[in-house]
Length: 235
Ligand SMILES: Nc1ncnc2c1ncn2[C@@H]1O[C@H](COP(=O)(O)OP(=O)(O)OP(=O)(O)O)[C@@H](O)[C@H]1O
Ligand SMILES: [Mg+2]
Image (cartoon, rainbow, N blue to C red; front, side, top):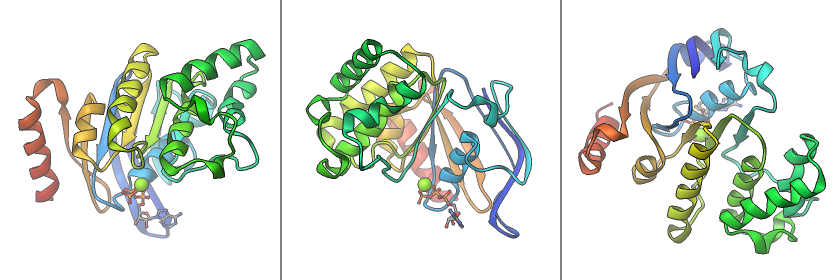
């Protein structure tokens, strides 16, 4: 479980993005954050990742401090970030090298994940030679080859086209459940939130407020879409 208790955070003095904010995300499930631009979704993910530190309050991942979970947390940022001087294969290979996996193990993992994500043909290219959507798939591949327990995905589908969207969502779900990952992800698309998530968190601001948590299995899809739309509109 990921637990935030009474967390406050501001980039600039007194301009709180989070103020005494508490929230919990269940283990081994996919939780999706839905909310308007600028509410603090990315900030929340960065706090959980340990990239940002709260001014006040407590964050625990499986009872531990984010800073002590290095290597167990995979974070895919909203802004594409591949190392331009490395080929796609080397970009994906990086966490495996850091994790000191041997060459045959690295090759096997890269082969499996890039096949499942449909990016095998890109492995020898450089990041500047791939499209935005392809780069997003490569970033997913990079996090999926690593041995993480917690996965933080900031709008992982924003550039993926309709055709491969369903496949990628299926892959993220299948892989996460297979490896029992605890996933926290952000999207702006209600359809994607429903296909990807087990739980949908509706957020608003400011400072950040949790409006509702909806468990997908408890609703009919159409009813849930209507409910989410009205929740997002009313606040
Ligand atoms: N490095 C920063 N310095 C100062 N303010 C920042 C910084 N990063 C974000 N902010 C501000 O904090 C607020 C929350 O930003 P955040 O990126 O967390 O929003 P978000 O919910 O992810 O939005 P979006 O849906 O547009 O990605 C915004 O008002 C943003 O302008
Ligand atoms: Mg964001």
